[in-house]
Image 1 (cartoon, rainbow, N blue to C red):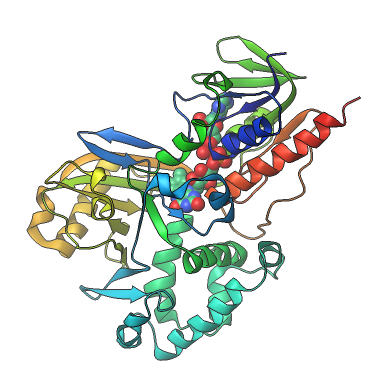
Image 2: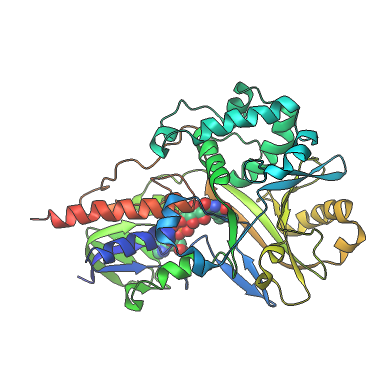
Length: 414
Ligand SMILES: Cc1cc2nc3c(=O)[nH]c(=O)nc-3n(C[C@H](O)[C@H](O)[C@H](O)COP(=O)(O)OP(=O)(O)OC[C@H]3O[C@@H](n4cnc5c(N)ncnc54)[C@H](O)[C@@H]3O)c2cc1C
C-alpha cells in the first residue's frame, strides 16, 4: 500500500480531505495532475502582475473557510460592500446599508430600484439569514428571479442590480439558478467581507498545502482509471490504498466513475495593464446597461497593491461568453470600455485572457446541500462538486465531511 487513503486532486476539497485525514492519524497521499495545488483557485504571475485564474473572491463568512484558513496570514483586502452600477451612461453606487449605514440617503435616491424595493431588501435579508444552512437548503425551491418577483421586487431592481450582480457569481446570465443557491450567496455577502488575499487567491490553497508534509502530495500525476483499490496513472504507474477519494472537478470525477459529465457554466476574464486605475476605491463595477459583453470590472490593485507592479494598475474585465474566441470578443470589450472610461482605455495593454468554459457546475433547481457521505462502492468515495454545491465553503466542507466518513469506515474495518 502506498498510503492509507489516496486523494485524487489537490483542489480545496482534496486538500481539506487530506488534512483532516492526516490530523486524525491516517496517512493520505494526494495525487494531483497539475504542478501546483488549488485547482480552480490559482494565481499566475505575468510581467509583475498577479492574475487570478478568473474573477474569484473569498467571502469571509464561509464557516468552513473560517475553520480551515488563517485569515490574518492571507492579509485579506475587502471590497466595498455593494457595487458601482453602470446605468444610462453613469455609475451609481449601491451599498449594503447594514454594513454602510451612512449610505442610506444615497441608496434611497439611487435609480437602481424603487423605494419599495429598498424596503423589500429588509424582507429578503431577514429571510436569507434565517436558520442554519440545513434549514436554508431545505426551503421550497424555485429559481432566483421567481423568488425575487414573489417577494415583490420590481423588474427595475432585478435588471439593474440582482441580475448583473448575482449572475456574475453563478456565471448564469439569466440568473436562472436555484433560489437556495441564491440565498446562500446572499447570506455570504450580507454576513462578512468579500475579499482578496493581498498576494492573490492562489495563497488560499498554498496555505492549506503547506500544512501537509511534502511527501503527502505528488504533482504531475494524472489519474486515468481506478481499479479495485488501485489508481492507474497516465504514465502507467499504479498506487494503492485501503480507501480512495475522488476530489477532482465534477467533469473529471464523472469520467473516472463512468458517468455523464454534469452541465457547466463558463466565463471569459480579460486582464489589462493600465498606467492609472479607471476607478478609485475597492469597487466591483457592474454593467446594467446591456450595451456590450461585459458583466463586471474591478481593479484588484486598488484593493491589494501587490496585484500590479509599482506605478501600474491591474484591470479585470469579466464576460459571460465563454464560447467565443477571445480575439473576437476583445473588440466589443474595448468598445464598451471606451464608452465607460473614454480614450484612456484604448491604451490598456492586454496581459492575459482566461477562457473558462467549465468554471462552475450549473445551479438550476434542484440544488441540495451536502448529503450524508456514502461510498460509491466499498473503499471508493467522492467529494467536491459532484456531491456538493460549488464554492470555497462547500469544497472545504465536503472534503472534511468525506474524510470523517472515510475515517469511520477505516476504523470499522475487520
Ligand atoms: C472563475 C471562477 C470563479 C470562482 N469564484 C468563486 C468565488 O468567488 N467564491 C467561491 O466561493 N467560489 C468560487 N468559485 C468556485 C470555487 O473555486 C470552486 O467551487 C472550488 O475551488 C472547487 O474546489 P474543488 O477542490 O472541488 O475542485 P477543483 O478546484 O476543480 O480541484 C480539483 C483538482 O483535481 C485535479 N484533477 C482533475 N482531474 C484529475 C485527475 N484525473 N488526476 C489527478 N488530478 C486531477 C485538478 O487539477 C484540480 O487541482 C469560482 C470558480 C471559478 C472557476
